[in-house]
Length: 164
Image (cartoon, rainbow, N blue to C red; front, side, top):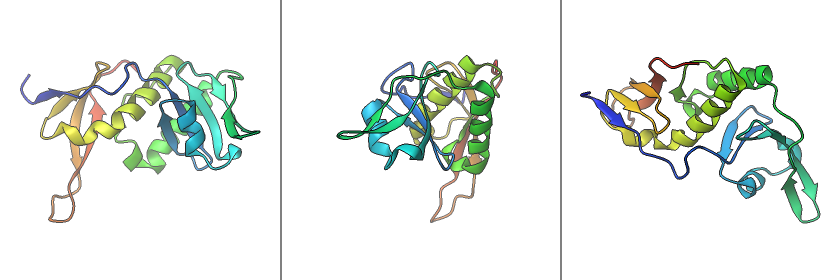
């Protein structure tokens, strides 16, 4: 289809690692536990750390600094969806990939991990009208902002269709 471009694949598919939610409501993706530990200054700064399976982990102070605990349960779907939707409203620049709202924990986790991993690739989509990501989701490219000598329009991806 004319105007459709594939999005570049990330370093590891499917998206893995950890997603952390900090005490300010920001979501961040980390490839491994060392990345999570390095990102935070104190244990309570990370409200929730999730692995790809939806298992909750905590940061705790250890003998040689912070460490990530073993899983201690599964995240609550309603709480996570509320926090995710709230983060998209509060920090729109951090969440420029918009998918159809999920109705299951598995879909929500996939959306969070995948969009967090894809976000850095938004700059490479150029002038395409539609893009398809490495997970098979198709998006319409939406440009926000004006093209001036000092500012470039920001690109957003809005999912077309989707199963939610």
